[in-house]
Amino acid sequence: MQTNNQQRSSQIIKNVLMNGAAFAATIGIGFVMSPFLVRHLGDSIYGVWVLVGSLVGYLGLLDFGITPSTVKYIAEYRALNNQAAINRLVTTSLTIYAVIGCVTLIVSAIVAVFFNRIFATPLSFTTAAAVVLITGLNLALTFPAAVFVGIIRGYQRYDLDSKITTINILIRSGLIVFLILKGYGILSLAIVTFAFDMWRLVYLIGCAYRLNPDIKIKREYFDRAQMRTLFGYSVFAFLMIIGKKLIFYTDAIVIGIFMPLAAVTLYSVANRLVTYLLQVSETLGVLTPAASDMAARNDHLAIKETLILSTKYMLLMALPVAAVFFVLGDAFITLWMGPEYASSAVILSILTVSVLAHLLEMPAHTLLLGLGKHKIVAKFTLAQALVNLALSLALVKPYGLKGVALGTTVPMVAFTFIALFIYVKNYLHIPVGEYLRRSMPLALLIQAPLVGLLLVIRFYQQPAALLERYSRTTSLLIFFAAILAALIPYGVLVFLFCMNRSERLAVLKIADKFGLKLSPRFS
Image (cartoon, rainbow, N blue to C red; front, side, top):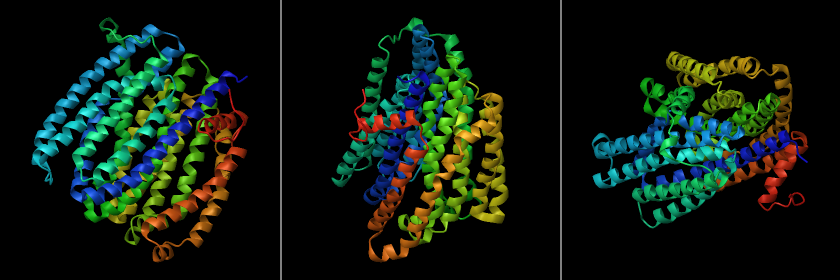
């Protein structure tokens, strides 16, 4: 019989792995779809699609951090078995999001009217306006539906969201490829994206009611005190979001101001790759409701074990990707983008150090978010963002792209080690020595065999030789196959030496559900 802590660890591992699968599907499909859409839509029209996504994406800031606030309090009220509080929270959040959704739709309509006047697009006014409106309507409806997504995450069932997200993106991408090949344009891209996003949200709303059939949305449940509680928590979550955007998305602006525009492209090649690595942190979202649940039960031991477990798994997931960037970065960039971009590998290595530092901090960061102690995280994040910007501005002229990358990396590393010590010792009240000893050494040592295999790949698979014999697509497939072959023994070593018995059982149960007969059937 599993203990409560073992069951909790098993659920966290399941959520992380399922989030990882959805993340891998999203990145993999995005990697394939981007060049496909560029080739078939053309640079200009695809640029319109990216631009619309960027503009509407900024409207996502209207969330003001309410989503993580909803997740936290759903988990807390569930742990306390307080259905009345859940109903007040859901009704109040839904009311706020309905207002935000209306504002989003109005702003989108205004942008749609003036879009072709502001940007020189090859689209007709009608087509451009329709694309902006459909994309804006998508976001406007997503805001209220986010309440039900928050319920699912508050119940720590990230696997439900991950499953439908993975299925959604695979089917949606296949349909988009079919329509684009048939000659349909950017409008079909917007319509298909909208339809599949709504399908996902309808499914998740149904899941929320299956998890809690007693959810009631009534006017009398709207609670101003609950609204103040939501905003009291969300304001610091919002500041954290702003700080992260300043840290990770201002480099291109600094380069564009002080260097030729061609330098932005060279930098963006490396930056796009580390952005994929950065998104590994999204798998840790499962810790926020878990921490709220544990805090409501006053289970400090579980909080400590969750921090140690999540740090270990974050390193086990992030370090192999970083190893590929360090050892094979120039080869990969050459095969992917062309030899003229190989110099981006230096920038890639520098930025990879910054992202690794950020990922090391994220488990403690996310637990504090779930515990409602994230004010200190917001302060550190904003301070780091300002130092980052100042240092990048100071280094861009004397050192160029390397200076901008160092402007991001140096403060990231410095702030991470200071913040991590303070978070663990002063806010989570966990002995720092025990935390470091149990979470990091084995995860670091297990990388040695993988690095050795990557060095072998580097020696035997020179990009120039591959491109001389094969097309770029075939060369990339051979390259990826070699990396995958190196990751298989790495995964076996992790399973055998980095997991305890309950963790291995959790992995085997998930494999069993996917039809991989690695173990006896589990009840």
